[in-house]
Image (spheres, rainbow, N blue to C red):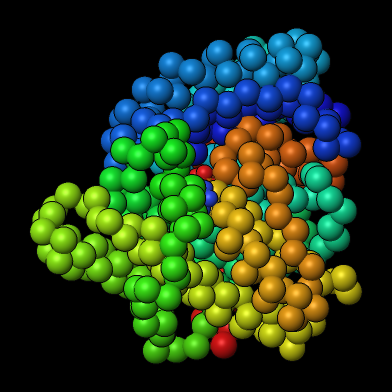
Length: 364
Ligand code: ATP
Ligand code: FE
């Protein structure tokens, strides 16, 4: 089977063709990261305009690399939830047009499910396994029980880690550093942290009233924003953001993020053990843009090892948004005969769409 995947949920326009062996036979991506960084976030209208501008070229490019005519495809998989409405709309309309024109089946895809299952494209991972997704808009822990069956153990109650990274990087004006050009906020902070001391700017650990596997990065973000203000005033450079000890601040901030990522993960692993929720070979899959961070990955791996689990992280280009993961999710659904829709033209996109069955309230 050969399936085309189309991704336009946020600010990246992606298209790829993947086969049932998990081989990427054509891939194209237009990333708006640089524009997003210079604008200080994703502007819906602007993102939509860029998707519209690039989608046709990106899809044609992926098909051309795969040396396929659209008629030779087995289906078109497209992200329909969750994401920014204006962005999702572009990909979905394009997919509708394509399946109509070439008489192809359509497989609507849940963006977070796609992030969660990408790892199965590169490595043998049996259900059920634990998924840890950390990105610009999400931070969640879920048990992947089957291709379309997820159990949500923990979710983000406010600011997602990628967003916290982006905001702090922006406040520090890191994009003005030559070594940071083209990088996302998270990648800039990871880079600076390498030569910083993580014990310089301490932050209190995040506490919830009730024990859970949920995440909250808002407090950490505010804490470090305040540190920046204080440093500016000490250094007499109010409002500039360009503090002399930025690398120490970054390293400490990154360490605070790591500590907060580890705690719910530990709880989730214990909860899974107690309720026998994972396969015999205990596997944790870490994905989403934040999973590109090697320091965080390393720390998370230590937690997994302590709990007798192996950690699988897809390569960086598969962790951030791309068409490949959508195509692969299409393949997974296609192979088990699920996910097809009778009337592609009536498919709607959804702005918000939680992943799986929510038991976050029951996990302690
Ligand atoms: P979502 O998938 O939740 O809708 P998104 O599509 O914006 O959000 P991704 O493309 O998966 O998210 O990831 C982008 C985020 O990942 C950005 O916030 C970026 O700062 C973060 N990120 C990328 N590289 C790194 C890194 N090395 N360290 C930390 N964060 C990173
Ligand atoms: Fe994403």
